[in-house]
Length: 148
Image (cartoon, rainbow, N blue to C red; front, side, top):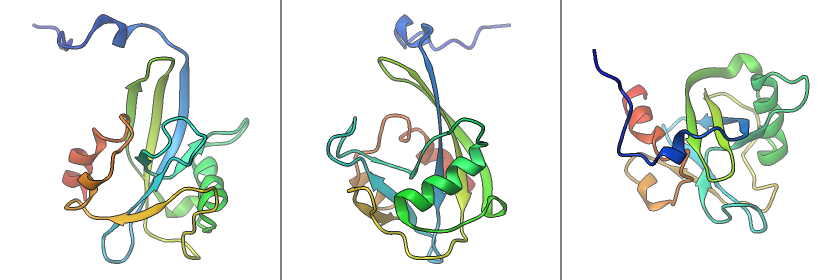
């Protein structure tokens, strides 16, 4: 029996850090394109791209948080029943460890709009490489290619 520890990573990757749990949505339109949003100026990682979503409020489920975040950030209405759990990201940033459940959503009302100063882009697997994704989002792409 062998251990499955990736020894190529520095030990600080495995060090305990504050855990930040956020939720993200993979919006997929009728043409099979995925929505990315940019981090707006003034926020950490400004200019990098991510799947829309955000922090989970007190006494809020991850699904409730995603429905709320999509309405606040993009002005679209969806429901918990329209969310399908896909996977999650686990990434060690310098100051915290991010845990991010990712849900697929193919049904919503309204047209996504940039309501928080971010940019929006509908991308395919052929064009997603043109966008500098956040470090936590990057490893999801090969998996999503397999799942979708």
